[in-house]
Amino acid sequence: MVLAEDLECLKAIALMGGCRGPVFVSSQTLAEVLEASPQTASRRLKALESQRLITRTLNPDGQHITITKEGEEELRREYAEYCRLFAHEGGHYVLSGVVVNGLGEGRYYMSLEPYRKQFLRHLGFEPYPGTLNLRLAGSDIPTRKKLEALTWIPIHGFSADGRTFGEVRCLPCRINDIPCGIVVPGRSHYPEDIIEVIAAVGLRDALGARENDRVNVEVAYD
Image 1 (cartoon, rainbow, N blue to C red):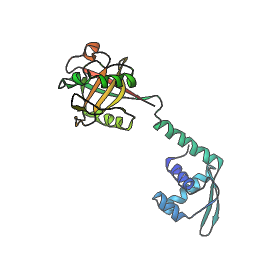
Image 2 (image 1 turned 45 degrees about the vertical axis):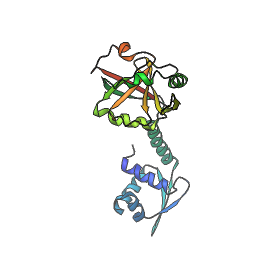
Image 3 (image 1 turned 90 degrees about the vertical axis):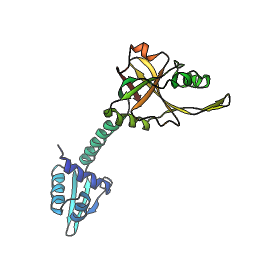
Image 4 (image 1 turned 120 degrees about the vertical axis):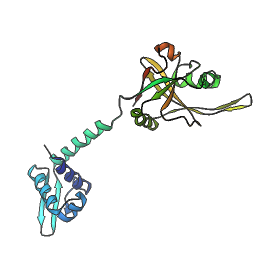
């Protein structure tokens, strides 16, 4: 097994071009890259050589180093592990919040036909006239912030009866097996610990949820 500090050295040589052919490296230069002493850098090179992860030719002022096939395979394994770590395929975030009373505005806005048509087109359902408001725990705020990196669906604003209705952002989600959407008014300064959720049904009734009951919202991502 390659030690973490030796793998760090191997990656440094690879970044210098060691996978493409011999690169000239002095112990001092390598030590500066690794933020270590020249003696430590030298020990790491000897460890890599003993594991046949590099070959090197010594010169009075330095050495020519080449990463071997085995060394390159070790780097590929490390790369694959990072890909698995950060890959988003099939992943999901879960937000947990308690039911709170809103201002009652969701019922009005979700009844407006231009909004309803867009939600139907993008989410596959017409929203029930009302939203489920959830207050997140403090530990869920970082997860809520991660949602901003996902692709939100724009629900375009419109004008009607002399009024202008602004754009809304929407993110598909689920509560239990119910398809839902998190909605955020474009001009809203809503507290970061509050989310509004819409669905084709009245969520409080469908979930049997009352104020202060806890509800989990799942957001899938690719």
